[in-house]
Structure formats: C-alpha cells, structure tokens
Length: 461
Image (cartoon, rainbow, N blue to C red; front, side, top):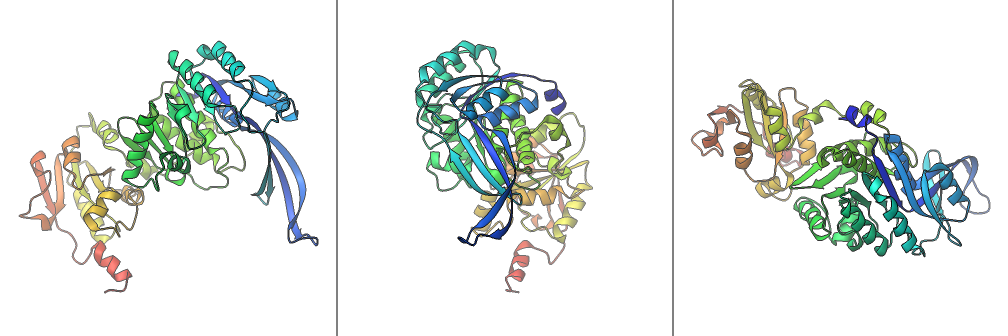
C-alpha cells in the first residue's frame, strides 16, 4: 500500500488558520538572583510552518500537490508564509498573523508565548469567492480550524456545500464544542478531549465510544466518524466501529500529530484508499511524528521504515480475518476466552489446540464482555494488552476480539473446522458446537487459574 501511495500525487487544498511556529532553543544552567526563575541563554531560533501550514507541510512531504488558501496579516509572519507556500493569501490590515513562540530547554518545551488576533475575519465573502473559483481542481480539501477566526460558521458552511456539489472529500480538524458549522463534511478528526466536550460525555470507554462516534457521524451528517484517541490509537465508524491501536514507540512531543493524521487521511481518500486502511496509515504517521521535537511532517519513506511488532499483525477484526482465511484450504481451529492473566495452563492448552489444525484462532472477550461475565473488577489487563500477549505466542495464528458474552456470532461468521474447549466442558452445552464439523476437549493443567493468581497476589491464599 505504501509503495502505491508513494507514486500518488493528489491535488489537495488546505484552508484554515495558517501560523508561524518559532522555536527558541535555550540552555539553562542557573537560577536568576532577581527571582526564583531559570535563566535561559538562547542558542538558536527556528521558524517553522504551524497550524494549517503544518498540514500543508505534511501533505507536501507525502508527495501531494498542495495549495493554501487563507488570511494573513500585513506583517513579517504573513510574508514568511507567502514565501514558503504555494498559496492565495488574502491580507487583512491591522490583523496579526498568528505567531507561537515555543521556548525549548534541554529538549523540553517550558513556555509558549502567543502573539495573535483571533477575532472573526472581516473578509468572509472574499475567501468564499476565492474558494469557489478553484475548488473543482482538487481531489480533497482540508479545513484546519484552530479557532483563530478564519473558519467562521458562514465560511465553513459555504465551503462544505461547494465541496459536496463537486463530490470532493472535505476533511476537518475541528475546534470548540459546537460542531454545527461542520455539518455535511466527509469526516472530522477530534481528539478524545474535544470529542468528550462536543458530545458532553464523561468518558469514551467501552460502549460509550461506539455510541459517541456513531452520534457524531449521525448528528453532523458525516460520511465517517473518526476520533483520535492519543495513546489508544484511532477509532473509526463506517458501518461498524473499528479501533486501530496506537503504534507510538517513544513520545517526545505531540505537537502537530493531529496535523499529520488529517494530512494522511486526506491524501489517502484523495487516492481512493478505503477509510480503515487510511486510518491505519494515519496512525503510523502520528507515531513517527510524536517521536520528533516540534511541529513535524512525515514522508512515506519514513513510514516504510516504521516497523510495528510482527505479533500486532495477528490481531484482526472478523472481516479482516475472514479475508485472510479465504482460499487458504487450511484446517482452522477456534477457541475462545478472557485470557486475563496469561499463565502456564493457558499456554499448554493453546499449544495443544494449535496441533489440531493449520491455523489457531483465539476469540477474545472484549473488556465490556469480561466485566459482564466476571464483575466490575475484571479484566485486570485491557483487551489490547491481552490480545498482544496472545498474539506474541508462536502457536497462536490470529486473535479476534468479540463484544458479545459468547462467541456464537463469531463462530457463525468464521465457520472454523474445529472448536476447542477445556475438558471440564464434557457433558455441558458448548456454544457453537452445532455450527462446526468437530468439537475437541483438551485437558487443562490443574492448579492454574486467573482467579487463583489474583487471590494469591492479594494475599488471600
């Protein structure tokens, strides 16, 4: 996929709040005698593209043909942006181009000083007119909203309407808690905090995430529902919910990660890549960017070299898994469980199960279903952690998480050749037994159970 995208050069228009990020790098070695503050000695300054301009930079790094449309002030910041971007900037006198001064000491941001005007722009009609002149020439549009007054309700509604007339994907990085002005867009990319404020939810855990993202999609007439979940990855809702786990290796600075995500999504949709695949690539782009200091962009060459652990390739949703199995002509073994704390009993059981066929699929109860089955104090480990532990075993071929209390629907969907359960299910009803050609019961090592391990840790035994 990355090889294909490397050869794509879609034309993408970026509209929004274009800014200048000024990084002031300092050395700090003493405290001022005048007040209890650090004394910082400037070693260098580095002006970079910020806000919507950073989205532009990300798209350019990916290989897109990018054009910028926005408002700047009659000042040094405006000239900096005009010199570096292929653009049509309207200049509003007596308005400041947003300048963010970030003070960096020993690779840590210690202070940010903003110099800006954030009132609504005076030239809404002129901006809309310029947009209407050029919109038909692009394959995707990004509205990068930093609440600096450019993307007013009037501007957003007009731009979305015109983009939809030409059937051009229009993606928006939103700001504020009222998303009414974004109605009709292809997708929004709120982060977790922004989504909570817009939805007026207390959390986005478990079922709340599915309900919340579906509500965003429905209430604001979006083509896709998307929420970025920081260290938990990206959630996307099309016909159903998919959560793509985070890939970050080491986080140094989250500045600009959202810009990279929306840039990759716009590039992929402009290149006709399906939304789930687009979100996976965007997730990897965010992981690369947060490992850098300051606003940064990412290229497909960097993404090609970005390696996720091999075992994570074994964690799939049921649709992906079914596609993997198609045409294999292999004997598929299926078992299921919570696997909350992996122990020797599990390992012995799963290794024996794998020997019965060519592929071993483990159906894993989601966090919500474990709570329903085991109580509010379980699971001890999250479904992602449990899935990774299972997937790291060489004798487990695939892991698929299911939300229901039983794997009946999953078994019906995957149609495995062999269903495996522990020996203590003998003479008991086995869910899904009527759907498979063969059921096998395997001895489970005595003395091992998650409950006993938890009790031992708590000092109860």
